[in-house]
Amino acid sequence: MGLSQNRCDVLVVGGGPAGLAAAIALRQRGFDVLVADALVPPIDKACGEGIMPDSRRELAHLGVDLADAHGAPFRGIRFCDEGSTASADFPGTPDRPGEGIGLRRLVLHTLLVDRARDLGVRMCWGTPVTLAPKQAASLVGEPISYRYLIGADGQSSRVRAWAGLNRGTLQTRRFGSRVHYRIRPWSHYVEVHWGPLGQAYITPIGDNEVCLAVVTRFPELARTTRIIDTIPLLREKLRHAEITSRERGSITTTRTLRSVVRDNIALVGDASGSADAVTGEGLAVVFRQAALLADSIQSGGLSSYVAGHARTLRLARTMARALLLMDRYPALRRKALQVFAHDEVLFEKLLRVHLGEEPLNRFVFADAPRLGARMLLPSQLRS
Image (cartoon, rainbow, N blue to C red; front, side, top):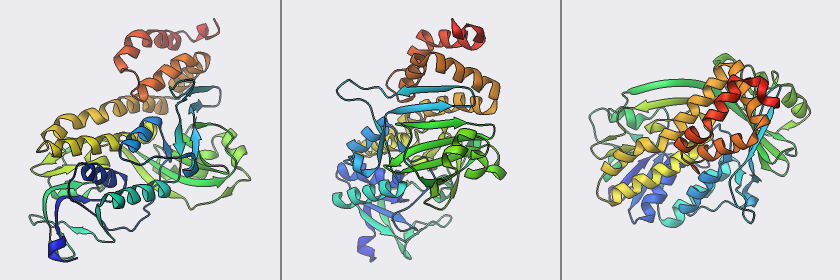
């Protein structure tokens, strides 16, 4: 790449969903965008592979319309443990029920790359950006001229360290892995199975394939087979199913940074902070940040992004704290799932809050007292 091509309005370091979403949103607003990544598409990552309805809407705003042919639709969330099962459908209308969709991460990445290319985003794959201390960023040994630099390079962001934005707090750190099985999905829900060692997420991603992702607090147990062996229902269902992918591992964190912007450098996605993957809302957060960042730059700077960034993560972190209490305290989890199994309307209302369809404070004032009473008086569950 010659020096004349090393000029752009916005340089995005990192070509995963966060970087591509930011590039697409910026290009939609007319900016010349260059994306650089050391990897070559399609880029995979261990994750649950379920796109929630709010994530699906945000993707549509970026011009990426997910069709059933891309994966497998699902209509809600189901929580299961050894004693209880609670299901909640996504909000919708009789004519248009709410739907998420499960699809391979590689498919999602390919769709985002295609959309970015169609819009005219320039992309340099297999090309790491050099970020040396106290030196300007360079690409293939040549300096890059840009108005803004966006760090979208994940939890271990080099941009974050280079820009001096690493100061923050790591609240939680858990360990996960993901694998695929050839088996006909047995449910129209994403199932979250709670076991003694962590959670197992089953997401339909095709007519004859499911994604299994597991997350645990114990790094030495972060293997799908170790978690499945503690959940008899899944162990039996998957006993004879063919594994169709190699196991991939990952780390999920809840991280808060003091700042996500310095001068003309901004962080987006996991580079800018995160909420534990237990919420399933990571991609929705990423897509909202991309739109916020693009709007802010269009308005002439990064001040709007600074002001609004914390809001993009607030609800996900709140929900993560509640769900991780259920992970850490099995007795609390068992009681909560008993309540939700008996009163699925409560579970549906909590799902609406989780998706941003209803404000949290409404749930707190209108529904939390009933939830609290049932949690404290489990003998009334049969009343």
